[in-house]
Amino acid sequence: MYQTVQPPLKFLPPRLTPWVVRLAQAGLPFWLRWAKGIPRVEVDGGERLAQLYQQFEAGKIRLLVAFRHPTLDDPPCLMYLFSHLLPQVARQQGIRLRQRPHVLFVYDRGLPLWLGFIGRWGLPRLGGIPILRGRLDRAGLKSSREQLVSGQYPLAVAPEGTINGMSGLLNPLEPGVAQMSFWAVEDLHKAGRPEEVLILPVGLRYSYLRDPSAALDRLLRRMEADCKLPATRSAHVGKGFLMARLLRLAEHLIQVMEHFYERFYAPALPSAARVNLKEGEGLWARLQSLSDLALRVAEQHFGLQPQGNLIERRHRIEQAGWAWIYREDIPDIAALSALEKGLANRVASEASFHLWHMRLVETLMVFAVRPLPEQPGLEELAETALRLWNLLVWIKGKNAVGAAPPRLGPRLARFSIGDPLSVSERWPAYQANRRQAVQALTQDLQAEMERLLQGSPRSPAAMAVG
Image (tube, rainbow, N blue to C red; front, top):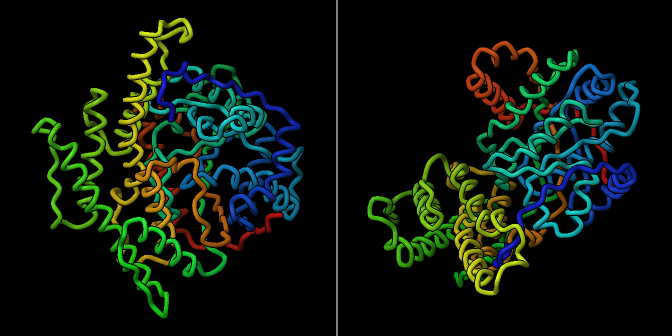
């Protein structure tokens, strides 16, 4: 994150470039296998996706893909699903597709900050559409709306508020997907076009292709060393042994962070806003209190009221911080006097510093939203350990977003295709009560995506990557 004043984050309009798409599709197997450690991708219900894509190409439907987004690896996996698995399933089903499938992603406008030049250059040429979260982004909404109504390919949107790193935990969905879909129905009606607008829920879960226990043991030892916790060894590295160490590490991290905030930040908060951190409470309750306190520290700096859930508060803090760094009120930074630029840099550096608390909660949030099950699976333990690793990286002053997470072994990415939700059929309800219709559609989408997380396995269409 920049600590000096910057020009506003630019809207990068989509510039779909066929040769860039083909090059990216060709390189995906290598990228997933060697850069992401994902040598295998599978899909349940791929025949449904093939039928819907055929209807999309025939001009019968407009399709918005609402996909699970627990990690930063999901978009390339979804792109692989469309460009490699979907053609294979279509051939097996005797379905003819006119061209190699592709999907257009709606992504956060701040993503190129983490991806650098490759992201700034490549995302628009893949047809990606940037949008600012937590505020009215007219350019992003207009472009997304146009692509959903008339784009060459389906639109893909992650409806969760933020990534959580946990395959089995779905965040509360934001209403943007539902609202965008109703706008598309409205635009089609105005144009006299007959296409039906569908939202297709797509689930995604990761699993390890071999036992990650040994690698998880090594990761825990590294984190224990960072915290100067006594090493714990056992002749048998079983799930119970790993879970006990993970809970000990989590307890230590929470305790240290509680003392940190109580000593250095809680006294500066208004008495009515202070949160009592009680060590006698359970880990989940303490995590919620700690997350609340950290967000209040940032909210106080930016003059925000703590309204909404943790995710909504985090978005508002992020946008407030970016407004102080990426200054829309300064037409030309180069035209500032040295005095004015020095003051603008001071504001930006303080904003960047206070965004640290928000990023901390972003990592803690997965644990504060839902307690760890009493009997988690080995893969759930591994995902939890990786979130704690992210937390430690951030506390140590490094960029957890840009840092490559430790490899615990090769993974399988398994997609599940849900039942499409017809937005067009809900149009009369939207005309009668827009807010209620958007809320109902969002709830139905949440229910379907939750069902996909718990759904029974089908016969998968599988393909090794590379």
